[in-house]
Length: 451
Image (cartoon, rainbow, N blue to C red; front, side, top):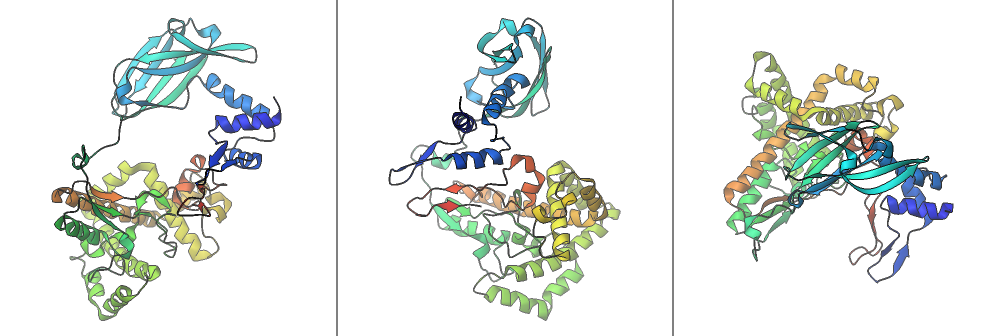
C-alpha cells in the first residue's frame, strides 16, 4: 500500500469524510492536506501513514476491549466484542459488569465456547474476536465492563442509551406547541441590573403561559469569563458544564435582605444611579454589569463564609453540593481563579495557552499550590455556580408548575473556547489545533467557522 492510500485509509478509519456536497450539488473532495491537518490534530503521525494505519488497526486487538460500546436499551441481547490471542482462547477469563448504580455483577467465560466473528494477525500471532452476548436488558446509564485473564486485562465503558429522545406528552401524535424565543442577556426590565437574569426568565414563562405558549426558548446560559466580561458570546463559552453567574438575580440570593451592608450599598444613590445607567444603555455594558454584580456578590459571599464557623445549615448544603460535584467543579473554579490572577498581572495572559508553562496542566504541583493558597477565591467561584444552578432549577420548576407543554428549552453551544476552563480541564478530549464549522448553505454563502 502506498503512503497516499494509507493516508486515505487512516482518514476513513478515523471518521474523516472523503468529500462533502454543497447546496448547489457540487462535490468537494477532501484534500490530503486537510486529512493530514485533522489527523495530526488527533495526534496521529502522518509522516509514516502506513505504520500509523497498522498501529490503529492493531490497537483494539491488542487492548482486548474497545474503549466504548454504545447500545440501545431496547435492543437486548447486546453483543460485547472482545479480542484475545488465539493461544489463550481455551482458558477461563473473568468478567465484571459494574452498573452506574454501583451494583456489581461477576462471571466467567471461555472464549472458545463463544461465537468467533473475526481474526487478525499481529507480529505472526493470531488473534480472534469473540461476541459475548448479554441477554438481559440493562438499565440506562454509563456502566463499566472489564475482562481479565491470560493475555488481557482490559476495561470498556458500556453506555446503554434510550431508543429515542424524551418526548413531552404535548407533542404526542399530531400534537404541536408554539412558544417564545429570547436572548436572555438582551431582556430589559425595571428591576434587573442591565442584563436579563433568572427572575426575568421566570417572568417570561408567566407571559408565555398566559398567552397560551407551550415553550420558551433561551440562548445558551453557559459559563463565560468572569475576569473578562467583554468576552460575551454565549456560543464561545469557557465551559458548557456550568452557568454564567451574570444571570443571577443578586437580590434573590438568600441572605441579601439580612445583609445590611449589601442592602444599604444597593440602596445608595450612587449605586442606583449606576443601575439606571446600565438599564438605559442601548447596548449591554458587560463590564458595568459585572462590576455592580460582583461588588454585591462578594459582600454576600463574605457573609456566607462568616457563617461557616457557626454551623450554618446553608453552608453544610453548599459543602455537600461542592463535594458531590467533584473534580470537574474544582478544575473549573481553579481555572477562573487563575484566569483572574494572571489577567491582573498582565493583560496579555488572556488564557491558559499563554500562561506560564507550569500552570497549563491542571494537575501540576503549581496549580495545586495555587488552589491551596487561594482556596477562598476558588470556593467563591463554586458558590456562584451553586446559586446559579439553584436559581435556574427554580425557573425549571416554575415551568413545570405552569403546565407548559414543553417548558423551557435551552440552546447549546457547539463547542467551547479553546482558551477556557473546559479545554484546560480536559485537554486530552480536544483537538485544539483545529476548528470546526459548516460548508456554505442558504443562510451563510461563505460557510461558517465556529472557532
